[in-house]
Image (cartoon, rainbow, N blue to C red; front, side):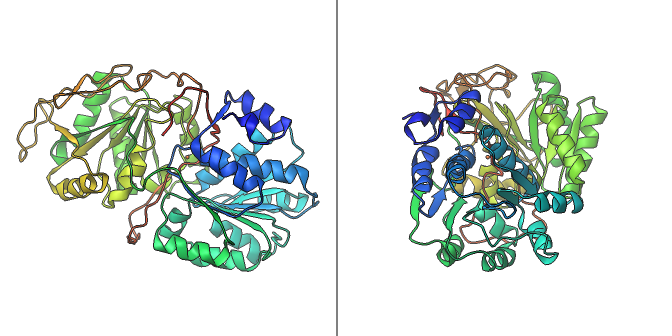
Length: 457
């Protein structure tokens, strides 16, 4: 199947082709016809699957053929984080480049006035975080009475972040008759309960098993004492020539402290977390994507929504204490058929987290130690060192690894030019939901798909 088989208009197809895509991913191939048919949709999609284009493209098609309204938004997309809101709106602009439709992203952390002025001029597609949208509703600077299509993107994450009351208030002021789309990484009981309140006879689409780690990601554990983690990380940067690494910490303070240590060692980095201003977060993301920063040290919520072509390495400087978040973290690499590597630096007091993660993903992770950084409480495990850029891992615990595509870390795009489609929990104050798992800002992406013959996951 090609994008040309999906019933999209020439202007949208031209924008898609300009991005180098001609073949939809599975979520796109299944979701786009459902949305074009005007049906409600409940879609389960992991990060990196191209879900953003799965709803962006058909919404643009529907709006381009419908009756225009000079002021009120006709589509509302709710996202859990600022970064995801920006990326969804960027996707709308990218694929709607040849259409006379206006879009706007509204989120907190920046001034209200520019958003108020833009809303007053009129927008067709409004992308918003629930908190800032509630601010506009309270100030009566937004009118949702003409919304024809509602999208809840990464609904599981929004529930995790405590947005359920805001979502219900937003739903209450919108027309009863509308098309509604819900995208989530899981179909937990809470998600199903929410869906029943506003979806009408929805089509259900599921393209990835729950809590499934990407097959294209080489996952390994390095045992090390906590006090030696920073030195080990610096050693890995210095010896393997890494150029674009996303490093996860559990806390904002930990992200700041590690970023300072990396900078002191000559490794250009920035911390990304909820206490950073919106301007600082956008600047750090852009510099990381442009290669000006070697490392981005992020907490889970802040990193949600990062969408980077061929991101080669994810480092868990600290394991998450919620096992599902491990899957979302490593989903930042190994996309679009590319190889990726996820390394976790694990100290003695994180072994329980590691056991929970292995139970969740139903596999034992390869474990190793590095000379000079052997932990005091774990026996040495013989294993090859982590890959450098452009290198393949040959043997893994005596088992030959099958090549999966271009080597990660060489800065190249996948053979078909695809960029995968998909930020994250500040664990402080989070409650753990039974079965719920935050997805894959993720991610969000403006990724429609991949060329013929490419792998996807």
